[in-house]
Structure formats: C-alpha cells, structure tokens
Amino acid sequence: MARYKSYDYDQTHLIPVCLEDQLLEGSLEYAIHVLVENKMNMSLFDCRYNNDETGCPAYDPKILLKVVLFAYSRGLVGSRRIEKLCRTHVICMALACMQCPDHSTIAAFVSSMHQEVLSLFRDILLVCEQQQLLGGTVFALDGLKLPSNASKQWSGTIEELQHKQEKLEAKIEQLLAEHQQADAEESQGKGGPAQAHQAPETPPDNSLSDEPSKEISSVVEEVQRDESELTQTPSEDSVEAKGQGTSEAEEAQRDESELTQAPSENSV
Image 1: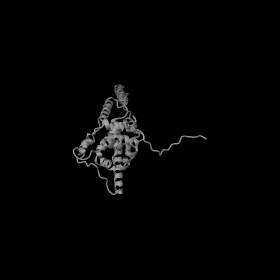
Image 2: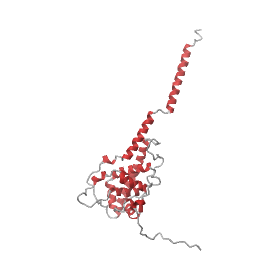
Image 3: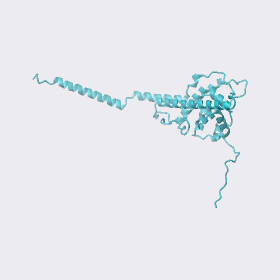
Image 4: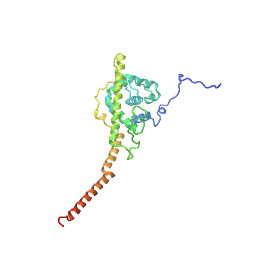
C-alpha cells in the first residue's frame, strides 16, 4: 500500500517574509503600491491633519488608500473586514507594511475624506485599466477595451475614455456608500458609532479632488490630438459621396443644355 507524506493546513509556521516579494510585478496590488507610493499627489491630505505639534502620529494616507482599494477590488467593504484583512491576509499585510489600522481609523478616513479618496481611486484605476489589470475584479469593465500603449495606436476616442472614467467613478461611489452603510450598521450593533482617531478641521478642497493625475492628463491630451487629426482629415466615404454628387449635377446640366439646343418639331 502506498504511503504519502502527511500535511496539515492548520499547522502554523514562523517563516521570514520580505514584504516587497509578496507584491508580484504585473499584479493589481503591485500597481496600486507603485502608483500610490510614487505617482499620486498625496499633499492634498496634509491640510486635513493638525497634529504637527501635539497629538500622536496618524496613519499615513498611503497605507489606508492601499488597503481600502485592495479590499474593494476583492469585493470587501466595511472597516472591520478591512481591519481583519490587515491582520490575516499576507498581501494586505504587505501593502500596509505590517501596520494594522483599526476599524475606527479606516471608517473616519473614508467618511471624512470621501472626495479625495474618490479622485485618487479614479486615477489609479484608469491606469490599471490601461495596463489591463482589472480583469476578474470588482472594477472590471466590459465592452470597452483600449490598448495598453497610450499613443496613436489608441482605438478609442476621448468619449470612450470619459465613459470609462464615469463607470469607474460610479463603481467607486457605490463601494464607498456601501462601506459607510456597513460601518453604520455595525456601529449600531456594537452600541454606538465608531469615533474617529483624527477629526479633520479643514474643509475639503474640491478644486483638488477633481484634478486628474499627470499620467491621466497626458493620456487624455494624446487622445484629443488624435481625435482632432481624424476630424480634420475627410473620410473616403465623404469624398466619394461628394464626387458622386458633382458628377450627377454635371450630367443633369449637360442633358438640360442638349434639350434647349435641339429644335422642336413645331419650329421645323
């Protein structure tokens, strides 16, 4: 009788872990990590915190953005569920750099900085969609596929790009609303609303919240240039139709002149 080595998935192990190795290049979580760390403008969050002289250090908004967006991509909403991910999910632990924000911190961040979170998530997901990383996630877009090279090989128009942006914004808005609703229901069940660890004192700057990132702006500008060139160049159908119309008019004028020059039977 054959014998096999036994294994037990319930067995816990203490192993060395390199956080960056958990974020595989070419994956959605790697793109979220790189974009948030190096490409997105995070200065719009600085005015929302007033703890430079007093108070404890706050969690970096980069950490909160990464874990919330990653949880959303897996269809998970609710601050308590995201907190649990930060404690148990290896990829989420790597995104959070082993920090574990509690549910009240996550809830306060999402509810008080709604517009900032929405604009950044929109720009990040547009870049991820360009790189075809949203397939199989909650943010997957069907029926609108643009090539990953943002050049004249774009097959879409500016209207299609704007339609992508609108669909992503609508999905993010839906997830943010579901997140806050889940937090409200959980807080009622726990005996009261969760208190924010850092109450923002400055009203949100709406002028910054709608400003797309430089990468998205460059993509839009290139598509606009391509579209303007297409509109200035007449299509073959229009040229052909114009030629047919000219030939028909000339033929009708020629027939009319022949009729006026031919003598009638009465005059003969």
